[in-house]
Length: 244
Figure 1 (cartoon, one colour):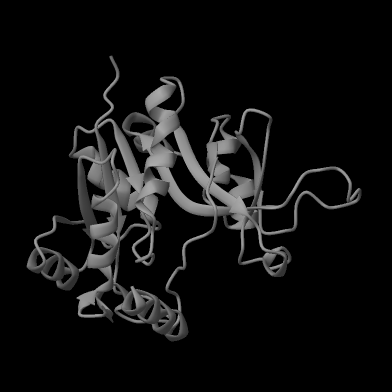
Figure 2 (cartoon, one colour):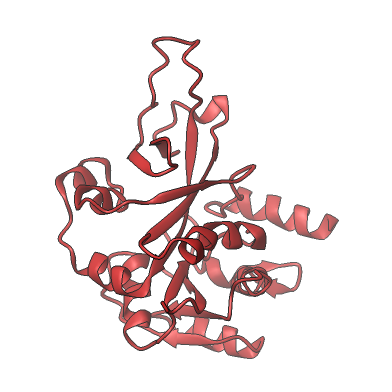
């Protein structure tokens, strides 16, 4: 029987250009990283949650609220590499990459992403998507995804796709949400793969998976969680959490 124990890993670091020290930003009396950790802990499928960071200040903040944290290398290029470092020293079978700047992440979306891995033993990786708002469809910062009939990703792009040449085609535009779940063995293999040409062209790490012939099963959720990238985003999240 395959190992189906699930751990959420939250990569976090202080070096952010638009919002320095973002994980430690106060949101209604708690650092942002605590809000993310607490929501991840509420996912039904999750056995444990750990913050992975190169910064001692984040370690201390996590320990202060009773969470778990791991000090990782400061040389990693991406959150995936940080996740893989954690996976090397853990035995759980499924690793979920939860973004550290999404304090409003829905715990149910974590369960939705993990579900296919629990049901299908040959599946290696999953992610999330939602209907793309019309105002975001031509925004290159909003990543789009198209899928096959089984719900596996065919391609991710910063461009609008599919192009609505025939508006009656019946295929909507879907926005990719950057929450990923992996089997441990594949996560380690993925992190060791060299970047592919499509990945480098679009600057989208998940294209490395497709370029290597591995499926990514997409699960649909209602909406994309609000990410905190700017001071304005932070104020919006504070208002939402304060309003309850």
